Length: 375
Image 1 (cartoon, rainbow, N blue to C red):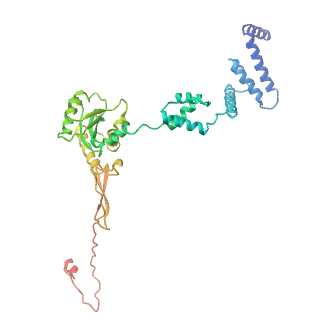
Image 2 (tube, rainbow, N blue to C red):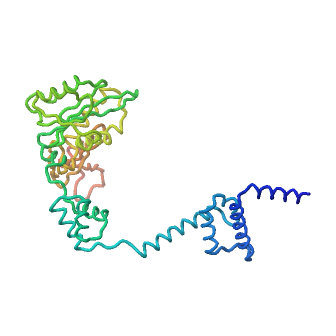
Image 3 (cartoon, rainbow, N blue to C red):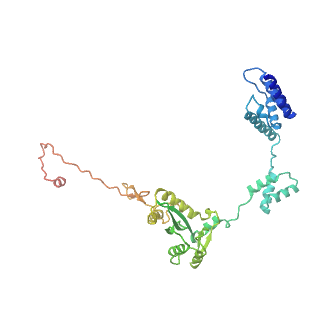
């Protein structure tokens, strides 16, 4: 009875499944049966068996449900391995043709004489009878294209105008009560000296204009003032700078490297001061920044200034052979400055102890230590 029921179910399934699927299923089962009847405790697969399952995977979507001898992931790994071997063989057989020296010299000549791009040079090479791809030409064009002439880059401008250039920037500092304090700084490019700074919780355009008047009270303002596109630096700020004969220069959007001197100083201040303290309020932050600026201007050496502070710290020499190096605390011991100091001479006091008198010398009695020293 059970056998008859299985036969009926198999017949009904065969009628519902398309003939092509039945044929593929029959092939899959017969191939696995052939592998299993080869003998041995473990089925030994050959390259033909792997090729069969790779090909069956390409034409049949339900191949995973009838695979029993290996895992489906193994068949996928076979296919990827065969794919790599196929393209490795093709690349070894064909490969990329080498570009001769004459063609490279012609490309360099066309770039230097005409400043053409890769499409134009590729067209000229085709007319000269060279068989080369445009991608190859573009690779050589990028390698031999001359750089922009000096004087047009932003770095060159900053280098040539550093004597008359200053920068202005804002950065924020959180307090212990999770409030933000805004710090305005104006830094000179020539010696990296901070010309002015101030802190506030509510920065406005009028406050910035007042800080500019305090920073440049007389006719010592720089010729150019570099700043970003912050909305606080409004048109009123530009008019105030124009009244001081200062030309404002704005950086491009999302380009902090153009105001790199100010940005680097902000990073230095954070790494060497603000990352080690918790600011309480504006007065606390102003005091910390004042102490840090004293250390920054007089003590801290700067790489771009030839290992010299912004205020040109003099070289100290040992005053004598007994001199020693001492450390001077800066910013409450957060940083140090080192100087030479004359070593103090420590006098050893020899305590007098009475001994037995010598037969040739009379015994001397001293009432105090001064008589002993004079003797």
